[in-house]
Image (cartoon, rainbow, N blue to C red; front, side):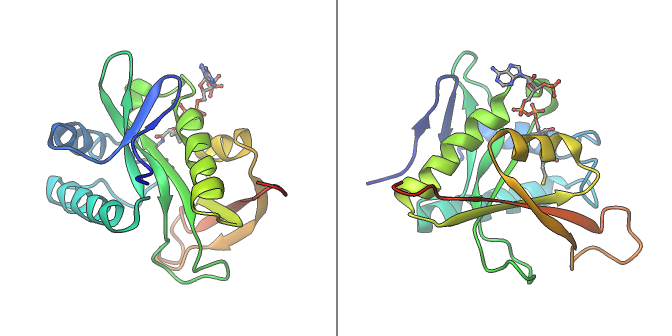
Length: 181
Ligand SMILES: CC(C)(COP(=O)(O)OP(=O)(O)OC[C@H]1O[C@@H](n2cnc3c(N)ncnc32)[C@H](O)[C@@H]1OP(=O)(O)O)[C@@H](O)C(=O)NCCC(=O)NCCS
């Protein structure tokens, strides 16, 4: 059974399509969206990333899904599950992550998409636990983690960020499958 598209009250989580590309490139050169990342993403970076995300979804059924608003049919960013590619005390694991274009912040869309992804992870993928992490400075993202019921584990130093960089210290959150789910 394919896991996507997933319908929530206001959103569709689906495979990436060509009409998403220019919007995704634009959000990744928005300094506010990329404030807690080491750098903006070039057009080539974004296109290569989309290809990786699409291929991962094709191969695994889950991934970082494109998110579309039902009311306007706009592509607004991604939310989904992935396997972090760095080594740390909590990897290998499955993480939940999100990135939305600025025009679509403050409406609860990240939480709505994230809850659908947690349900998919626990009910369809039968995961026991799902992690999320971000720079300690990224309060909007930490707020999403809290609002969807994740609990703080602890801080850690991200191995791919240089020592001394203000984004180096990260915070890890986790949510476990409830009994009987
Ligand atoms: C992280 C990010 C997705 C959070 O977006 P967001 O819109 O703030 O998150 P939510 O979906 O939880 O929305 C919460 C806000 O919507 C408001 N809201 C409005 N309608 C709502 C509804 N129906 N349900 C829930 N919240 C609603 C809430 O009050 C809250 O606003 P506030 O922060 O002013 O109190 C966004 O800031 C982002 O894309 N950042 C850049 C990328 C990034 O850093 N990603 C994480 C990297 S690890």
